[in-house]
Length: 119
Image (cartoon, rainbow, N blue to C red; front, side, top):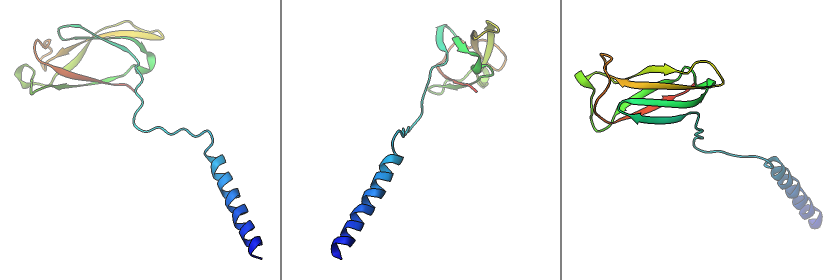
């Protein structure tokens, strides 16, 4: 009788273990964030920023500009990003932006972190 109980336990364990192994077959788990470049950023000089080869899905993007080391725009106003040129419709597009102060004047000095938030 002990052999039957032992066999039943071992057989039950093997069935459960096999089922668990089959359930995990082909499962991929990701942790953290996946960053995929959508545009090629360029900073040709001054307060100008270019985004080249952007997919149309990035249309309607938003920018966040933060000063580094307590640098402030002229007149203590917030720094904004102004669109200068847009290559127009198509599968991919290019855009040129400029950092401006609250009065719309180009930023001449300072260091900033510009974050692009794409839809």
